[in-house]
Image (cartoon, helix red, strand yellow):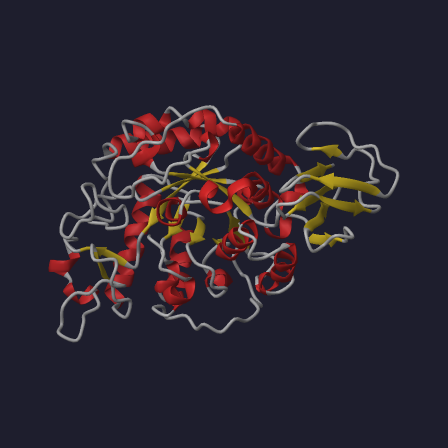
Length: 448
C-alpha cells in the first residue's frame, strides 16, 4: 500500500503502542527452507507487456538461476471499481478475497504458475490486504458491521488518501473468522507457502497471533509483515520490513548522515529485535519505486554499494521486479507501465550475492546466520567494516560510505586461509594488517 509520509504517522492509526522496547521473546518457528532464503517481489502488471501469470511463468528459469528462493506476488485478487484510482486501480483495493484478478489470467493460470514455482524448487507467497477492502466488496452490503464507520455512520477510508478502500473493524469476531478462512483457502486450494501482509501494524496483534496458529494447523507458513513493530514478530510473523535501513541508506547517500549513524543504529534500535526474528532489507520495492523514486534517484552513485550492503548485513535481501534490469523508471501504480527489460550488471551482481547466501552460513537468516561484529578501520567516520562468522564460514565486508576516496586499515580478520574476493573471485593473500584505498562508494566483500 502507498506509504504515508512517515511510519510514525502510520503507527498513529494503529492499535500498537509507539513505545520502543526490546523484543524479549520469539516463539515463531521458521520453516527450514527460510534459513538461507532470498525474496523476489513480482509486479505482474508491469513485469511484461502482457502483464499476465503465463508470461511471468516464462521468467521463472531466470529467477531460479539467480538464486531466488521466495517469490512474493503483489496482490492477485480482483480490484474494486467503485472509487477506483486510475484506469486499472490499486492492487490493494480488493473486491474478492477468494478471487483471481482477470487482468492477470484465470484461476487455472494462477494454479499453473504456483505449481511451476514449486516445481522449480522455489516458494510462493501472495500479498494479503487485511486492513481494508474495496467499496464494492460483497461484505459492504452483506456484512456492513465488518467495517469501521465515521461519526455519521458511513464507511470510512483507513486514511484520507486511500479513498478507494474502506477500513475493516477487527472488533467484530465474525470478520476475524472470515478473514482467517479466506487465507486458509489459498493454502488448501492453491498450496501457497505464506503471505506478505499489507500494513500489518494497522491490524491488531492478537488477530495475527490467532491467524498464525490457525494457518499453521492447515499448512506451516512463512509470514512477512509490512511493518517494523516488534510485537508482530513475537508470535505471528517470521519477518518485518527493515524500513529503518532504507531511511539510513537514503540519508547517507545524500550526505545527511554517515557510517557512524549506521553503526549507531545497528548497536541501538536494531539490537532490540530478537535474534530469531528476520528483517527484510532492500533498496527499493513497489512503494518506494512509485512514490519516493527509483533507487538511482534516491541513492545516486551509492546505489550499487547499498545494494551489496543490503545483501550482507543481517537480514533477508529483497529484489524488486526490474532491479535486475537496472530499471530507472518510476512504474505507474494504477496503469499499465511495463518494465523495459535489458541486460544490466545488477543481474549478475544479485546472482553472485544470492548464490553466496545459499552456501555461506555466515549470511544465513536469524539464528542460523552469523552475528555482525564491527571492525575498526582507523577511518570509521567514513568507512563501515564488519565481519560475520558461522561455523567454518566467514564474511568480511568493507564499505566506503562517502563520496570521497577513503583509506581503511583492516587488522587480523583477513588472515584466514581460503578467503576469496567475492566480486573478482581472487584468493586473498594476507598475513595481517592490510590497507585499502577505496574510491567514493567503493566496497570490498571477502568470503570463506
